[in-house]
Image: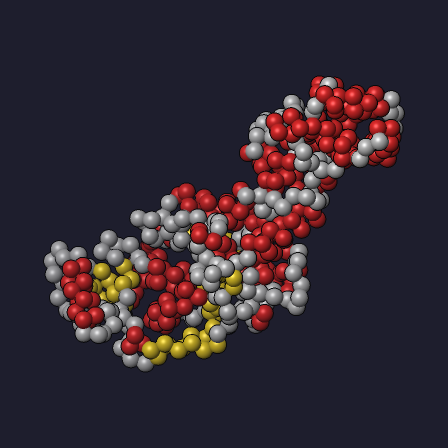
Length: 466
């Protein structure tokens, strides 16, 4: 009988959720969904000095925004201290761990001496066989690691990775204040939560041999490991703020759609033939580590923008509204309590989504429709709303007033009629009308603008300008 697949995403709440972390979460999520397994969310908050509640909430908000739903959790390691303490005692009782009384000053001196001698600055095992317990002296608990041999890590992407035990040291399991350390709690949690596959960044690969020795010492079966390559910037250095935004929620605030982010990050290190655009259902169906690359992926902001533009165009207007509305409010186009229905907001989308690369851009360009008063760009006003334009606008008012059939065809016919009468090019008429209606020289097609505003609002704005 096959074991049910169970994976986890375990971020540390010491800052925002990085794009690299999001991709790790996504690969775990896709792997679980592809195999009908479970996806666990665990918050690794044992670093009390750096973990914050704000970071935890930011992680959860990022996951919700991206639609990466979890089956179990979110668990918090700070709420599982009793389990860790029992496991420390288990190792101490079995002679697989020991108390270390070396002071920080002594450890610094030992490291310095080792470096001067050209040796690896690892703990030298001073307290490894110590039998006395100095009264009142603070101590950490260290793992009594094997002294020689190798650790073989079976990696689904990299095959066998072999580590020399001589390069490892007796890592600390429990600090002097009783709090456990990362490498220890990860092993306990993954085992106690029945995690079958550990999928994480390759920056964790160096931790894996230590963790494998702990699995063995605690009589836990080892999970299957997969270490995915990191994401690099265009200059081939590790992705950081200097390459642009690296936080998931910053991309949301910049006007990117979650489906665009998911599609882009899935393709960052994974492929399925030449296909570029995937629905979530397709990603789940096709995802496999057989098609994940071991070389580092390079983050391409232009490719992400191209995908975002595609999703803005292809998402049905009423489905786009919940994503667009916060940007309408944030940019001041709408009040927070605007009272508009989903359908009323959706009306403007078809004439904007062909031109917008982000939702912020779409929100800003929709101001002409939602704002009660037209806000004029002064350069546009002085250039196009001149005395020479007055008779043209008056002709438009007269023409619109007599239009019974207010359609795209009748609006276009009216423009053509006036252009022919005046012997001018369309732009000479369209730009003054555009500025009168929208306040700017840049907008959707003028016929679309008029149709969207409707006869009454169009006439009102033209009359106000005249």
